[in-house]
Image (cartoon, rainbow, N blue to C red):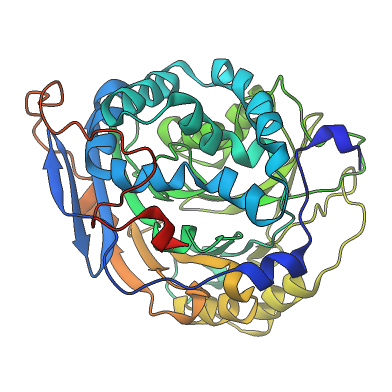
Length: 410
């Protein structure tokens, strides 16, 4: 691997040793701001935001700024934890130019978030492009079931998000329901202050989940500064596309910062887009099932395929029909212990999400069903109240919404 292509790749054994568990108390405070609100549904923190990019940014900032303030400490905290604090300046240098590569609406949203929250824009940018410049080598897993093999007769899409928490991330997962003006409403299983999408579904029933990949046959660099930050591209997919065909056209049109697989499912079928800065390949379901882990499998891109998690997921082929419960069991079988920070199952047909967050491995927690169809329903717009009041003052990364010091979260 070219050392100049990425900031760092971390030893998995070190990360496992350093990972922590979540606390039971609520991290977020229920509140409203303009057309936005934060509330708990079945103990899942839910943020609903509506309007223009500027309104979305101000609403999210007012509702989650105290937690986002902590999340912006994550990249530097991680470098310090692994003894690479000296790489912080390089981290910022790699990420800074990527702001100009954001789609204009997302750039405006980040600017509004920074202005409303008082969080330094460079720190907010750093946490939003970390996935492009930093390569951790972790292990997300997805299992997608097409209607022909589904016990419900409709698609089922299960996904574990695995990432090193540094005793921070597992406390801050939330579900964002966004109603961007003139675009598809979508749900994103996210973290406060991170405006792109890693796992989500829109009101057309198009769902997606990203998986990091480190090796490719096509000779691509691990980092291309001319690409568009990929979580923003995936958000565009949810905002602008209704099915796999539309998603594929958009993905091919966007230059890529790095290499990854994107599992995608609409109401009819499933696919995995394997992408590098040089090319995009697609693979489809085998006998109604499709699995995705962290290695390319298409002929032009595959290198070596250590397939333990993949083989475990594909054992679902032994079942005549696969249920939501079967998918949940398989996700738990491939969990990565303290790295499995989120577990979710999308049902694109009825627009239902089953979500587990709050402690690692999330796959061991009860999956809470959420009716997204109801949450996607448009509301009557009200005047934007975001221009006054409720601005969260800058705390220098010291305070949480509960009044605890950030150091207590680590």
